[in-house]
Amino acid sequence: MKICSKCKFVAENGVCPMCERTKFITEAKDDDLVIVTTADYVTSALIEDILKEADIRFMKKGTLGGAITLYVGEFTETYNFYVFASDYEKALELMPNFDINEEDFDEN
Ligand SMILES: [Zn+2]
Image 1 (cartoon, rainbow, N blue to C red):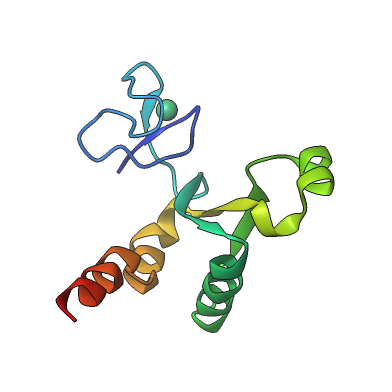
Image 2: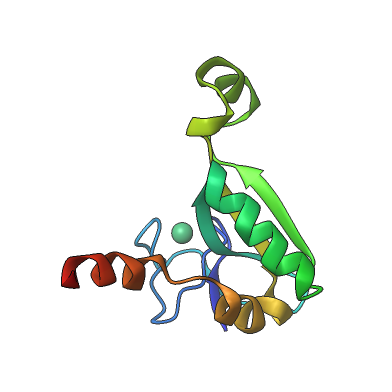
């Protein structure tokens, strides 16, 4: 599995989806932390539950940084969820697919 060592995103086609560069692409080691999903404050609680339930170790990190979070409030914060590269496939399968839910609304 290829990842961007700078952004910690999985780069399936060899290009980082975040920085859109190939410079930092490297083969992931099992103990590398990679981002499995990014979630807002409300969704992050749901994802935490899913990962805990599945016994997958993860790290949750706010993307805004502590000082800004205090200023704008926690509800506006988004979180990156990091898992070990060895758990990535399993964790990804468990992630709710929010895009599909939005399409369901359109059908009604
Ligand atoms: Zn990158």
